[in-house]
Image (cartoon, helix red, strand yellow):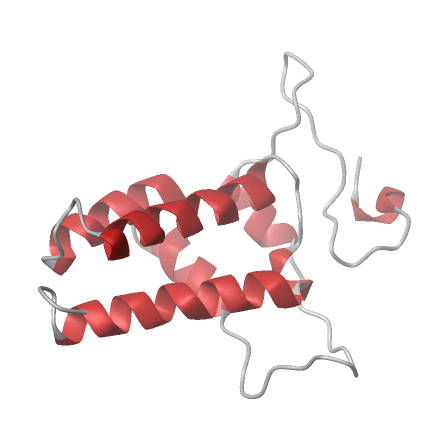
Length: 132
């Protein structure tokens, strides 16, 4: 099913199924289907980061699970720290939203906030891996 069949909700990519009839849309395909739309009631200031963040993942590690593992090893952060745990959880939430729930996260204020938080975590860790 395509975006038109999702009843005009700009936050949905459709209802895609795998061969076992489970909801699934792979990350790279989902990213090509996303289209950021301007909303007059968007309450965050500044440019949106979701698409830039996801495109960087696509051109690097290729998916969100690998992205977290790559980041956690390269960042120097303690693998058992709360900051590393939070990064993993936020990446898992984003992955579930895209691949299972099939949300166009580029049109969601909540997912914009999640991506901004991931960027904050990564910036703080880059400045001080032992004390982000």
